[in-house]
Amino acid sequence: MKLIAVASVFLFAGVAVCEEPTVQLNEFQSKAAKLAVKTFNERLSFLDQSMQQHVDTANAKLREELKAALEQAAKQEDLKETERISRFLQADAPPKPDHESAAARETIRKLRAEVSELKKRLDQMTQPDPLVGTWKYQSGNVCHFTNDGWVVLKGERIAAWKRTGENSYVTAFLKNFGDGSSDEMTLGPDGKTIMAKSKSGKGFSMYRIPSK
Image (cartoon, rainbow, N blue to C red; front, side):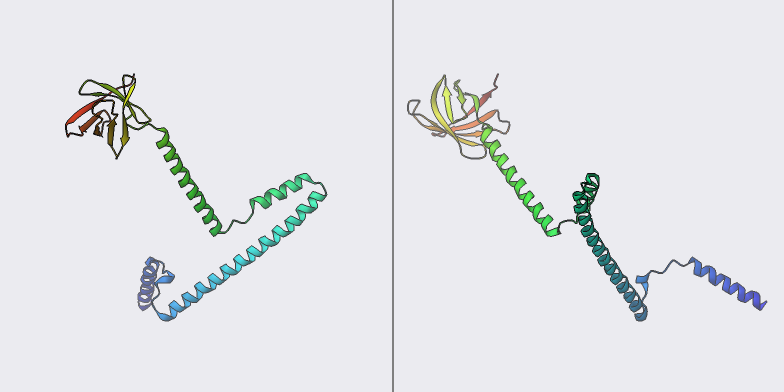
């Protein structure tokens, strides 16, 4: 009976051990165990660095010998072998240092920004101002605001216009038209209406006539 009881204890203990999850190296708490894990990791790191150095040395040696083989193949006029070795050396060329790649990327970024800014300026120069077009005054006059800053009525220049803000403009009438005063204008959000005010403070509206 004692043997059966002891066997049962070991059996249940074995089952309990089997059900425990695998212990990870970073779970140890004792000083001795932590030191053992640290030493183990340092050895692995050393072996990894040493292995990488051996691999780098072997690669460098391989490239040197292949370059010599390339010269020999070229002297022997073995074009196929020359091409094979050349392709391998080009494909297996070591990457440029990270600082060179970063510098190249920064240069490309700056050039793209400059090109974008120049394109934006060019668009501003080539696109007409939103005010350009034909407008009808409340008085009934129909005037054309040209791209070069003139206000034309029935083929005659009567005023000059200038942009003063985001949607703000001023129109200065010539002395040979009216009293030679000026109007302050604000272009509406829809681009189809203008709220204007004369020099005397009188307000009026203008409406865009769609181009045909």
